[in-house]
Length: 299
Image 1 (cartoon, rainbow, N blue to C red):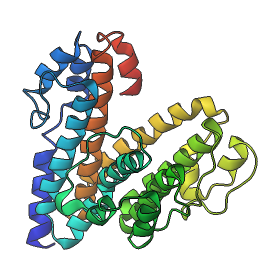
Image 2 (image 1 turned 45 degrees about the horizontal axis):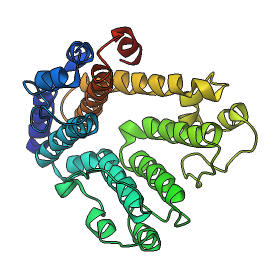
Image 3 (image 1 turned 90 degrees about the horizontal axis):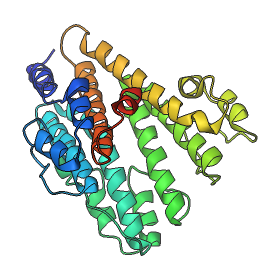
Image 4 (image 1 turned 90 degrees about the vertical axis):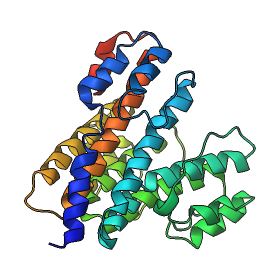
């Protein structure tokens, strides 16, 4: 094992201490106001961007931006192969930027963008586009691929499915996560929102029929995400189960012997899970912090 992988693994272990943890997130959820939650976060691992007086949306963005900063630090300590793993997993942030850019090009209100730095895939070129047609062409000429149309919805779904395909192809340790996430996205869009979905390289040909038929036709690496789900109203439970598997798999990756890509992937997953929990906790704090049992069901 190279010295670069060792250094990268040590940095990953150090960054894992930069988490609130389930208990810390629960404490945030129990705050009686958003300001109290912000004061609490301002003394912990998310203090880099969280400020008292931010709106809920700004605070949630600040938590995610701190996660992105940690991933940029992690990537900087990796050998080239490890940095590429982090870049692929951090593609969520570029997807989020593309979604905001789509809203702006469609004449809608858009939110704050993430500063991707060296973790960007094609964002500078995508950000320079001035129309949805231009954005589609830029995506088609990039690793994200052609979304198949230039309407906002197809672009939004296309980049999310494209991210899943890129992770599945480039991060073997996360391939099942990516396939399951693609299945959940398509199920949510088709059976909850009633909208068409672009083709996904991970899921195979689109199957007709209801959610049960769709789940039954999924390839094995994606089928686990929708196992025993028959009603679209239960998709939120499937999403929680997805996160539970990611957490369990991440701990397994971290317990492996030696250094290499496994602990890096596990670190990214656990950092992302922590940010998700804190963002969910902020939602409750902004509503008075009760009932905390709701947070327990999600955490």
